[in-house]
Image (cartoon, rainbow, N blue to C red; front, side, top):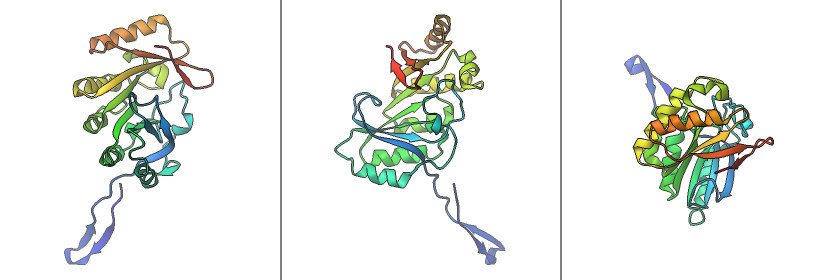
Length: 220
């Protein structure tokens, strides 16, 4: 977030102009999809940056933080030409919740008449809570049993993920819970994960197979 600062001699100090909202860092764009936002024809905006390092990540080029490949004003201008052609816009990544400009971007997209979706791993529960009133659907990616996140994401992220998921469940926003079956993720780990999810009220889990090429296939 930036602000313009100018001298204010009369007060013996400086005047600080109103701070401009942070801009979304866009790492890529898919102009049309029928599979990333259930029930909608949608565009996918890939947000740049993710603090986790999942062992199977298929969007590794989006991991480093940065300004992205496209400017948000350009993407927003393009979305204006898609009204009446698309139903929705889904924000993916990377990890969209890393972006402090996400809620502003969501509001701008909704103002154009689009439904909004989010793909997230729930890394920042408080930011998810702020975004939920602006969302129609969330695809939530669980990585492992909550006590075993470090083996997949490279850090102890299970508590944040559990808190974020509980926040999502309480919000009333539509959602799908997914898990990528990473190498070494065996039946016993899946049983532990299902127990974790059942304890907080999740009954349906979609499994995704991790392909050697880096892509993901849906199992069920």
